[in-house]
Image (cartoon, rainbow, N blue to C red):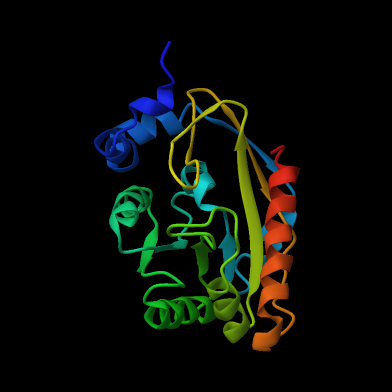
Length: 215
């Protein structure tokens, strides 16, 4: 049998992400298990915060948190258009741009939403990698608004992985997906000299969440 990941062309990927019917049918078969969900429930309704997730785990997390009123930071290049269509079909608001390209406009928009008490989801290794490396833009947004960052990870017991820079994960039908949350954390230092250490700290917190999910 051929590797299923080889069959996902840009057209089929767009159909998967943007095709509301296909995604709804697939997503409804997934079974979710939550690890350490208490801290998120405590934050909700009290203040805005940032969900931080690796780009390759985006699809099941979009499905799991659908219609909860969160906003998603989506890049403006081709990959972003696919994800934007999926996100809007699932009830998300959009912030266009990235924390690396057009960062000023994106950071202003993120800060405005956080101060209004909204939840914002950011992939700190997006839009083009390197995979699982925490770019500093997310830290800037959190520090400016004194907002918490909540690491979140998703691991499926069986999934397809695209041959893309992020090994984009598509859980197979009836997969069990474990969603794990790290404890909310704030940026400790606004000093630019500490940026690398802060990025490494949050990268480790993200990877801890992945391990909690079984990855």
